[in-house]
Amino acid sequence: MGTLLALAAVVALALAVVAVERWRNVVAGAIPVPWRLAARAWVEGVAVDHHVAIGVRDGVTLAASLYLPRRRAGPVAAVLMRTPYHRLRDSSAAMSALMFASHGYAVLVQDLRGTGDSEGDLLPWRDAGDDGAQTLDWIVARPWSNGRVGTFGCSALGETQFPLARLNHPAHKAMIASGAGGAIGSLGGRHGYFGVFEGGVPQLASAFGWFVGNGAKRPDSAPAAPFDTAGHLRGLPVSELVRRVRPAPNGFTELLTTPPGDPRWHEWGYWDDGDRSAVPAMIINTWGDQTVGDALVLARHWQQHGVPQKVVIAPGNHCQHKEGGTAGPASFGELAVAGGARPWDEWARRWFDHWLRGSGDGLAELPPVQFFMLNENRWLDSRTWPPEEAQAVRWYLASDGRANGRAGNGRLAREPAAAGAPWDEYRYDPADPVPSRGGPLCCTGNPADRAGPVDQADVERRDDVLVYTSAPLAEDLRIAGPLAARLSFSSSAPDTDLVARLVHLWPDGRATNIQEGALRLRWREGFAAPRLLQPGERVQATVDMRAIAYTLPRGHRLRLHVTSSSFPRLERNLNTGAPNNSTATEMAVAINRVHHAGDAASWVEMHVLPVQAAR
View 1: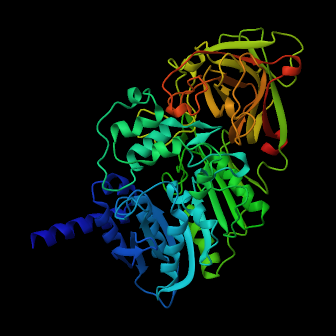
View 2 (view 1 turned 45 degrees about the vertical axis):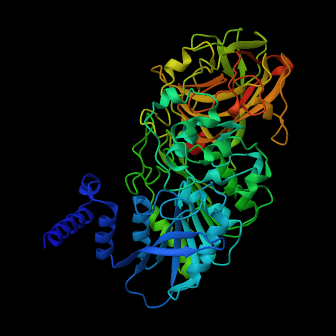
View 3 (view 1 turned 135 degrees about the horizontal axis):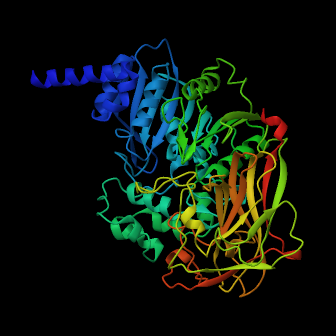
């Protein structure tokens, strides 16, 4: 009797939480996820079975939870979500499952191979395609299925949709993938792979944080022993960092030691230029997501092949678009955000209603692309990305020979410098790297890490950061499109990195990052084969800086940082030219130069919207 009374009390509390929105986040965290699910499912007329087992061809059994509407007039469409975060602990997936099921969908939430209660070994995303296809076979064979399935989810739950989509399974009728640009491989020359690489440079803090917490190949592996994150990430070789605190087999080492362009990446499910999908897709991302540029390239690939899609780029960091429900985030780093609300759940239901049930117009009123204009705090529509009316604009680098730090004399101007020094020089020491401040960061597991726009004051005081600043802007600068820095560069080292960061200099002296990117110089001519530098050799290098939609008001100033490290966001280049920097332990100092005179002009290129379109 006591147990029943206790359960009744918990259920009553959970129902109150469901009914009173303002108390939900305060109280719900104290209630175990399965109890919350049971209470809410009962209220919303959903039957939940957490003991579904699906066998696949190699003998592995995959565990899943099935959410079915209790009242069904006949076969129903299904939504599939596949998570590495344990389906009974992933409250976001569970709440989405209840939302869809309460609107008449069958929903299957499955533990990915090697995670949760599923058997097998995890390696992102080697088995996501085949396991997903066999799960679709299982769904459409159920008596409650109408044979149509949509896939849904953010981050890993979004990325795993892409290996499945390229198989074009006949039951896979639609997808909604958020924060999922990490599914890209060599497509469009990106070589992003799980969101771990940019320009061939491993995104160390994010990769380490995710793999130490979630990347063990088997779900019964012991968790990591306690460790100091900041100190531990300085260890070498980088490829062994996860193994040192969590000795169980883990995909971290395998991913960091597999070269860009290696055929194994495609075998593991990452996209290349030859892949095609006919699955209608809604692709959602945020400006602070480290894979936003990759997501936009994936979306362009869909568009180029005439596949129906909608693209939405919201404010915020990774998977933050739904923070606070439909309201969106109130801030993005140190940048205030207002007006970010979108009816995410309604759109998701309408997208699936059209493609899975044959009802509604499939969001026909929405433009192909909609994006949030930061600092204008409003949404803009477009047929393409970048917007057709955006014009490519270059800002050229110049100085009197010392652009080092904010006290230097580095300049940004719309025309190449007629006079000045031929280069700026800085000393990059991997033993004393430039610290990361904000930027495209997620999943580090370190609560001290901050993502998004953050003041760069301490970074700009360093001599190993070149700083180029424009005059006060005569009119609003409305950036909307991809960003890239084209730099004429030389080094004393056989290999080093370039980090380029676009910055907003406010009238009060704050300097907050807008967007950034990196390039490992050995990959400057492409990823088919590395080419080391010759000491002092001047080369042209293009640093992809992702994409952004951001307005700098009149009177504010534009700034560019150029340096060779951002640690721990990015792995340090040890400057030795070792075959794989991630397995190296020796380091050397590099003397690096950015040239910007005559035929060695350097610039940053962006796409700019006309000012008259602002109001």
